[in-house]
Image 1 (cartoon, each protein chain N blue to C red):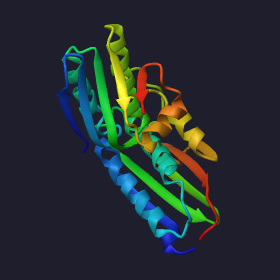
Image 2: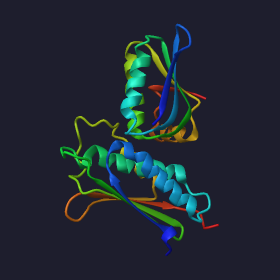
Image 3: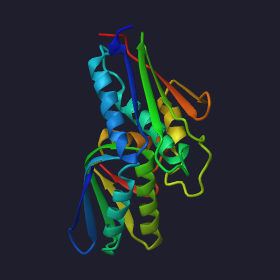
Image 4: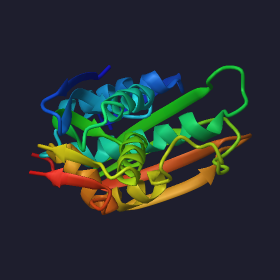
Length: 103
Length: 134
């Protein structure tokens, strides 16, 4: 199972460091981790994705929904250091409006 | 055709089993003599197909049903079939997915067929073009 390590780095940003593979079996855990990060109330929630070696559309749907909820309150979801496996599905689905991808 | 050219796996459609599916496919590709197989594309397409089974095939059943996975290497082609014996892929208003599964599969494969299986259920057949064997 993947791991989710939440850190509030300053008053502006909460970082969630994710390690592992994200699919429909880990979607609930991912949703809980993102909800907890959003509850910190920071302007930015950043997913540190260098340790994510697999991402399917179920997990992507969870990330998109979290990004939309954050946008509704004026906050932003960022995805940092995406691996090739993550970039593949992001590029295929052309999803960059809701999730801000940081190299 | 040798045993190393075929893979057959049957497992429960419990959501937590999809990493096992990827593990089996990785092992199958690693054991093959395919030069530089498109492992990332294959793993994503197979996971999406299996996630469809998890989300749709056995909705309303008391227990998760079976996912049957078969992979076959033939020449410069890999064909993978994901079968279930459930109730089809009817859309769900409460679907936990993003609705992107089949479009993602279609964009990753050279050929995609979705057809009913004898009796009941659905089969997703995916074909991938490969480089020539090393």
